[in-house]
Length: 315
Image 1 (spheres, rainbow, N blue to C red):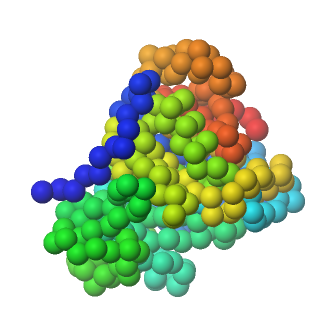
Image 2: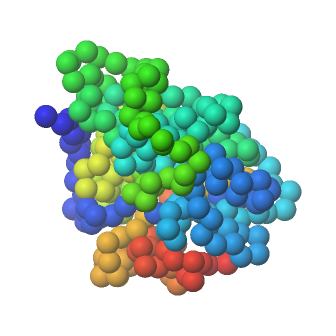
């Protein structure tokens, strides 16, 4: 029996349960180096390049977009993105990318979250990426009564941050597996994890305003989670940069914005009306609805069709 966390609460104006993370758009210092890393270390394909921007992903579907800025700096103690997470379809796909990183001697941190298997890696400019696959057969991670709880399938408790059994992971590689192949076509963006200024204000915005399911806030851990359709989390948020952390300056490297794809144009139109009704400031763009959360993290509500390169908004 698979372990599936249950929402703490479902919003009255629930976002469509088929809504999924789209891509993350990052500001970078060196576009050439970053493109090379995401191709060679992660296995993403270069889908397009235009001026000082590029998009990488799978078969024309972007997971990461990059825009080079002048004299960008890395700031601490500000809001933004903690990491973004690329979801592989199975342990074999994850094993291949982890083995690839080891073969390149690129530092990474294999971790067993019980319900997922993962490794964390930083790109050359310090953007943290989680690479993971689902493993609900091994146990569950959830928030219960305001506390984070991880538990193995046999009932043993865990902190949810155990060392990953690499022997077991690599056992899923098949003879002849080539490490330099692109990531599997089923690979997609799994979730985004944000630095925010206030847990309750963030929960209110994503749950009560946008309609994501509330998957729990662990106040002692200073972290919360929301999702569409009861997934364990599509957005994690924490105050680890400090309560009341300010937004980053314009010249900050890192997050420009992140996206969610609604399942169709009708849902995007419904969200347009909902945001208008609730008095939420937003901008209508060719590729969707652009807005900011209470910590000034920017997001774009879009659809898969509008996420194509021809709808790129110049920044």
